[in-house]
Image (tube, rainbow, N blue to C red):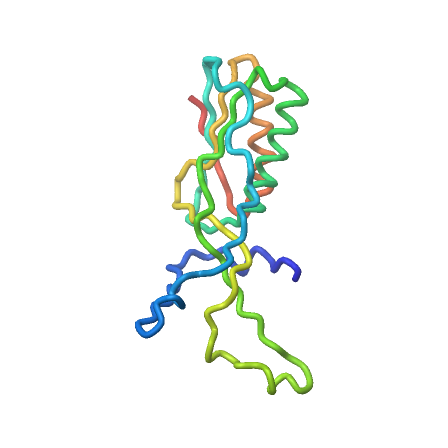
Length: 171
């Protein structure tokens, strides 16, 4: 099954949770997919750095885990190539807890024989997402003062992979 466009899951809304009184076993979401983002901390964890940069979301939005992974990969690749892993520390601060479900409808000739329509429309889990509030920090990057321009460039590349406008805060 192909991946649906990100605009279909971008809006924030409270997830519908099925609660069954007669059969409590039906209340659980079965077969939750694995998280696509595997590494949350990259670089040198032990060194003290003097400059900290945050990538902050400007809007409340829901972001899929594959978009977060793409942002992490593109920024980490630049940092490792230019600075080497000993000269930076980057961490992804959000975790995709939200389970995305999809109710695939059967369409075509003769589909009415095995289609239940919307009578059982809970949907099957297809992915995970993270719900982000406005002005929430998503990434933190620590570097030395001399590497500030490379760090800004890495976070700008990560911002291009995310479906929201972001700002970079430097401290």
